[in-house]
Image: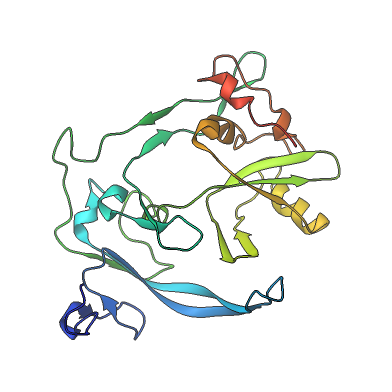
Length: 262
């Protein structure tokens, strides 16, 4: 939608939302209808920093353009996602490349984790046209659409990965979380869900953060992607992922050794 005679979006470019009275931009490829779940008041960490308010929202309706769904999967690149990338918010970054990277699930004969390589993947429909959906997809969580996977993670892109390091009673912990972001210049968050693979219960990062009240967020550079992948291995509870044993059979095993504690 472009500005015309002082009108940013004309009524003809609005459409009804599923699950909420707020209207959506008809041309937006993805739209979430939300309700306020909780309001957080964030005090500025310094005198010159303004107080802020953060809303935690519950998604009650999802609208996805049918052309984004190819062979039953979301074509994230077709979203042409745009993100801010500089301190002043005046520069944008455009995500255009996808890589596949399977998290480690196997160990070698000596019990060391085998970390698969990351591989670039061609846009869906390059090798063959693929089959897209004729009609838009509309669903209302917690009900899910009739697709092979929950499409949500593929709709909120790009997302930076927060590589969370904590210190526990017996060891350090290092694990990647794609549900990471910031609420203000001095407040960040990460979302930890699920249970620990070793006997259930809270994951180490969540348990350690609650106990100590502190954690460190590390930004993952491209050259450490395999080290990040290695740290996602379902290691036993209390394992120190900084010292995780990686198999020489791993892709670029040396890269997995580059994560050093400072």
